[in-house]
Length: 304
Ligand code: NAD
Image (tube, rainbow, N blue to C red; front, side, top):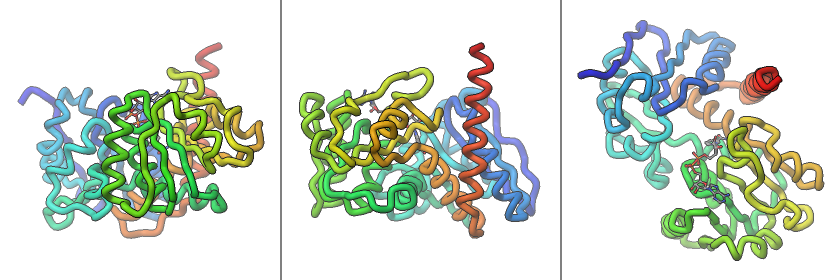
């Protein structure tokens, strides 16, 4: 084997990791470690970046084996391995199976159990951040990894009609077809770009799940001026927390949910499943916002 491997962990403490590509700057390790320390747990969270290890995504099964032998208790899984892991685990949590994506593997007596906490993060974020959000008709822009989880959470939360848009029409159509099977009593359809303005004009809420708004993808994916009065807006982007969409929608008086709560929500649910403890969501969120805001300061400083 030419690539790098998994380093040994200490017994009698939690050793957890994140497997994915290009994840060296992930905020998940400090989020987990700070909250675990506050709970009095000995907890180490390591990054296993496939690019740094020189391993292809298809090695994720071998890496999970190595991690298990090295004493890891669990691993979060991210792009591009979330679907691959579905075939590898011994047991799948019901929602992870329905979603067809795993972002957490827990080792339980030698068995690999797969969960998906991304959708739980968004469900909880919506509940806590926009508790009175009407759910009659929601438009979602972006149907990739994050969008699959938010769309599932929206339907799970009771959205009556969901319109799915993506610049790649096939992605929107495939996601709509899968979700229609899972939620047959609710209306789910793909929405091609020309129909978007009309749909947005009558939607009770809009979820944005594309990378637009990140530093390297500036701009907004749809016309904020076209939103119905009082419609709520939710952005999944959290680097930065205040995207152009969040800023513009807030300025126009729309109830807005930024991407921070979802990011914290998936980490909170993962930490709870891994340890069986009750992490404090408010404490995790305060810490997370400090981390992201500090990043903004560094970026600004770097730009000057
Ligand atoms: P992805 O590449 O899997 O999916 C993005 C999708 O958006 C693609 O299908 C693409 O075709 C589509 N798209 C791009 N521009 C578009 C546009 N203008 N209009 C319509 N569709 C468009 O990416 P992802 O993993 O889903 O991540 C998307 C964003 O969500 C990133 O910024 C990521 O950081 C963020 N994210 C946030 C959380 C969270 O917890 N808050 C979790 C995961 C991802």
